[in-house]
Length: 267
Ligand SMILES: C[S@@+](CC[C@H](N)C(=O)[O-])C[C@H]1O[C@@H](n2cnc3c(N)ncnc32)[C@H](O)[C@@H]1O
Image (cartoon, rainbow, N blue to C red; front, side, top):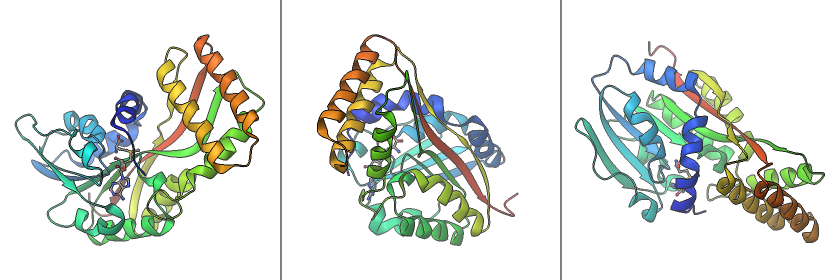
């Protein structure tokens, strides 16, 4: 599955605002004593997590930004301020997850990835991270909650179709979609991690027209692909919701979860 640079750029400010402060603070506290750190950012896209965390980490930083999309990697930061070193790593995380974690890595980060992966991949990730005693920061996993106001009678059916679409294969086998964050937290706890988690919801206000229109089109396309709803119903819903956006009357909340998992006994 591919993601456009334009979409990642559009969502980044909302992602940044949504990131859960308690979770980020737990990560920053964990790193407080370090003078230098190497971070593997999995499925980095154009570097959103790098840009969010870099100013928060006081240690000298080496970032390994890993993704399989070369056009996104080409847009990731190539140069950086003093004391921050960045390398990009073209890699397919479905096949070569272990290679992305190998070497002198101190922390794994990721954002908006876990809802794309399968149960099997998540198990592998937790086991491989635990075997290396790596702390893991995973932000912005979609959790299945979508609230739109004002309400429309079709909203529930569209959200169900979107959540069904979320569970289709995104390149890692059948995706966990909305179940990803809960499963990940349970898995990391089971392999001996202490986990701090919290909500990281997107909140789109009436003025956030561009991202609302983009989301609504994406949801209509997902519902069409699932094929359970009559096309005229999907089109009618999209038209009504777009009219609300144009009238400056639409608010949308999309549920996400962030977590920071550290192997117990780390501090
Ligand atoms: C929703 S985007 C998130 C990007 C970035 N972390 C962010 O928050 O903006 C998902 C990312 O996963 C990457 N991805 C998907 N499948 C992958 C795979 N098999 N190996 C490596 N990266 C993959 C995509 O290229 C994309 O950059």
